[in-house]
Length: 213
Image (cartoon, rainbow, N blue to C red; front, side, top):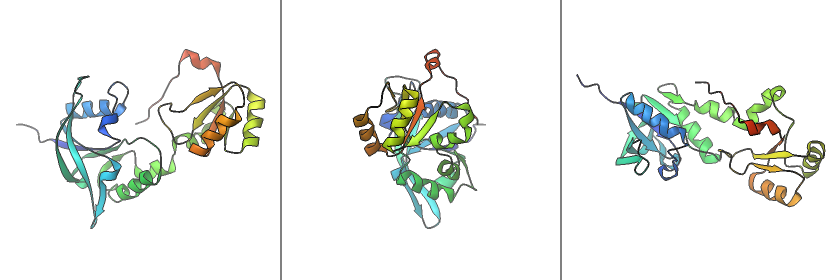
């Protein structure tokens, strides 16, 4: 007997932006297909709450391990997300109001289907800010947009790495050898609070990451 397909819904950024070499969403999709899932993909702007139902205007897609044509789009459908066996939230930051709105909408069905990561957890566990609970394992760290505090941090630590709180994939992460007021002001205007960390030279040996599923 042919097994009935299960539905995997993915809330992600534009399909045009998926990098099949580095994007985990692509590999998750490939693995899901091996496990008999049909994939329905939508962006945050396609999500709606309609009379107690949470729906999304999705593209039914197939991921292919083919660099030239990695994604095949079959059709557009309006999917009642309660039909999904599993929903992955994979859209990239910024963690803006649109992102927050989707978590509240999806929370309406989070007790009825499996959503990874949980919408409430996404709101309450912002990646860089949550790390402040683990400061004993971290290099000297400052989160601020106060220029005096930032200058004091540079005076103490000399080489400093700047990280935007809301960004991802290393975007706009910079190593500064000295306090550059103009560049930091531009960053503050763009991102507001920034994370500053003392540079650890051992990073040249590579890093290790732990994924907890």
